[in-house]
Length: 212
Image (cartoon, rainbow, N blue to C red):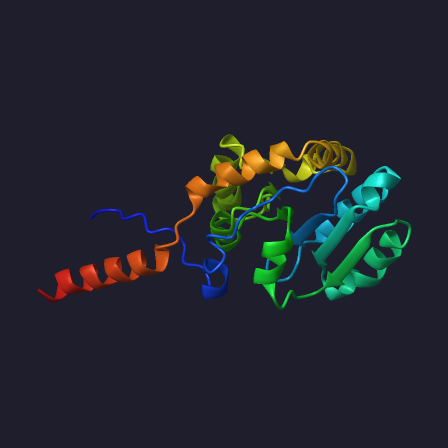
């Protein structure tokens, strides 16, 4: 028995972004944030993120351009919170054109499932990751840890993901965009653009060995 590392295949529209440049916004420019929480959204993001954003200084709120995945049952309450701010926000249960949103994003806030991690690595977007605490055998924490260690992402445990902690980090990133540029460069090492081909080759090799 042996192990082959192939990486996780990503959709063609995501793979098409692998050479897209990343430009961090200057301190006076719009700041695009994409918030995704898996196939059904994440309740914790609907609770923590809006509360964080509305407590930011007004000059930072006015810079924010937010696209947030939000479960249908949380939409009304989340909209009410955002109405207390100067933030331009789009709330949606499902993001149709995720490749466009990745391209526009300066920062992504997400869970750290395998597919999300693979996509972030390909598009090289700095990320704030909040591993799902109840994931099987803590796999999301293991997914996020290398990115955190490489300073490609900022990783929060669920009990540490509070409006205060998130707000401190966001203010620092908006005021010092060079941190984002360095994170994007660090993210490059995790990309596996040939994952689909490598996986197909490995499967064919195993099947061939068994047929011999």
